[in-house]
Length: 115
Length: 111
Image 1 (cartoon, rainbow over the protein chains, first blue to last red):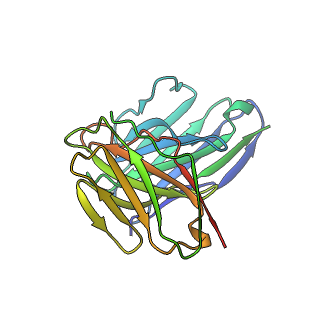
Image 2 (image 1 turned 120 degrees about the vertical axis):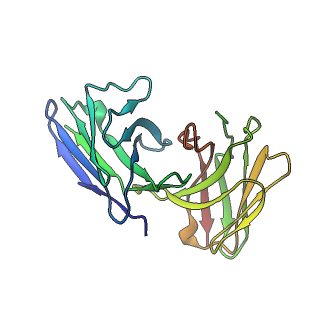
């Protein structure tokens, strides 16, 4: 149980375009989801906390107008990278909390390449 | 927030027991300790979680001394497939949900 999926698993887009990444909790409801970014050979860096039915909370230095997060239901959060640039190329990972547990359930990640 | 410190890398051999220690000198009373495993180009996977003393599950053991300023993840009889990066996280359910990730320990298992 507690499976999280992400779609797409990888995407290539041109500079200036927007890309939407979906994060779904398949067998549980998640009021809170998290979005991370991970550059090669580096650790995970939290970008934002996504709460169902309310605005996302962004970490310092993360542009909320560039990385749009929508958590419209208890099983789906989306991250839209707007006006993508090559420096946005990274591995984006989402996670979800099962109720108020400490354990995060992670998606498989999405590899974004901006050309 | 409790910061964690882990060795950058470790090597071991198949069949050996591997112990990875994490230091968290500023751990707070309400903080739990959680370990994750991550393979390249995959999301992290939960291994084990504990608060104090010893916790054991089907894949690992977690040892936490009384002062809780460190913890040790023990992997029994490792195999090549255990080659991965292991992260130690510390946090409180009511604050940061353990969201601050350190550099992790890259464990390489040799045949």
